[in-house]
Amino acid sequence: MPSCCSAARGEFKGPMFDLMEHSTLSSDKGGKSASLMNDGNNITCRLDIVRTFSPHPRLFYIGAKLFLMAWIVAVMVSSIRGKTYPSFWLAYLTHWGFTFTTAYFIMSVLSAVYLAMQPPANSGVLEGGIGLFLKITWALFAIAVPGEIVITILFWVLEFDGTYDYVSIMVHGVGMVLIMIDGFVLSRIPLRMKQFILFETFSVLYLLWNAIHSFSGIGNPYADDGTQNDDAIYASLAWKTDTTGAATLSVGVLFVANPVIFLFCRVLSRLLPRRLYEEEGQQSFKGQQQSFNDEEAVMGMVCHRR
Figure (cartoon, rainbow, N blue to C red):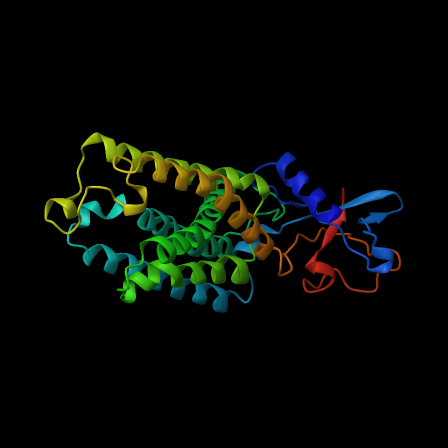
């Protein structure tokens, strides 16, 4: 527990897209936590951006990413085309989330291909144009993956009316699973505590839009044609007719559900060993039997001296 808290504090203090891993190696002996030390010097670890965003074997990983991206884009197109009023498609939180998910999948493929064709001289730093490109990809993932979980839960708990189809299941569950596979399994992108700000900002912006829509008189085409009884986008967020209920749900999502879901996603992002940067001339720790060149050994960490 102290190790987890220390890592979380380090992520809050560091940059939003921090490549440094603040974890420590744990020892079961006596229940104590052993920091990565060597002759009194701290050992730090950082992500390898090439191995993370464009892992080997590239044919397999890029092929898998392309397949997932094509699937998600096809679902998005089907979702828009299947709506009676396509111009109102982006009014819904589900489609805000799926737009970010689709954008992430596109950026994930582009990042993998770009890094395969033009790998940076130093894969242990985020700098220049490729640095900005990867930060955008990382930010989209930090917003989309917890967003998909929250959206899926809200739909099945509050909005599900007993009817469903292929697209509905895809945007309320399967898309969530696919982005987890791409980000947590294929790329093994870690979530940083400070990136919660991105996810919370996304949520606040949608709730502001929802409230503005309710009081602005923009209207709802599904209410105009009699499909719905009022012009609220969601019955559970009917600001005009049930302000207290809408405000209560909003506060619960922002200050209870979002933090819990984001922490859950952060834990998931740390289950598989991260792919870390190996510096030339790296030395093994005294008494360390596992090879740090193996990403599966000792938390999958390849460390270098700070």
